[in-house]
Image (cartoon, rainbow, N blue to C red):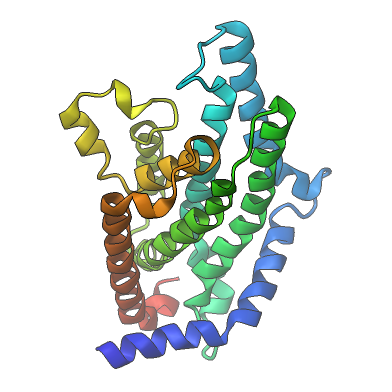
Length: 267
């Protein structure tokens, strides 16, 4: 089983050029024919940030969180969340979207979830630059730890790859899985520390919510941009997230490999 798994991963690495080209085409095709084209990829998150800024800073005049203006506290948590939700939502249904490629005998189907992840990464890179821009506009100091956002983005991608193999494979046989994932994402938004600070929680609830793997990523972004905490100081949560990511990667790869011979018959 180990040899089979390693062979599966090596095949993915060999197809890296194909993955990049397909990701570029996927990104362009997603908005082909619309008036604004790829601009739509950035509109919704930008509008959300603008609304949050207007409502909480200008409307409610919210007090700073940890002595940080609300929008500077909110954005580093919101950006990785939309990245994750975009990756998960798009990969779950990707085998249906590319069913014509799935049915090709020689095509390596396992690259399709990764294509969707890379397509979402193009947008995420823009929003990382957007975080830096907002901090510059506010005149907020940007420390060296801000470069850790690259590490946390890579960690989130690795975690999502395993989930995407698992969910995309299972969605072929369970048609309602896409809707279920959307519901879970809605719940996940509120159990992830995007709008709340764990300092306001009881110890029991705080420990419970820290089991959410996105807690590590969101807090990591805030550590990077706001608190200047290096990721290696988060030993406990880093270890937990790393073990969980490896488990998801291995289990996702094995499930995908086990089921892929049946994809063409079900699609």
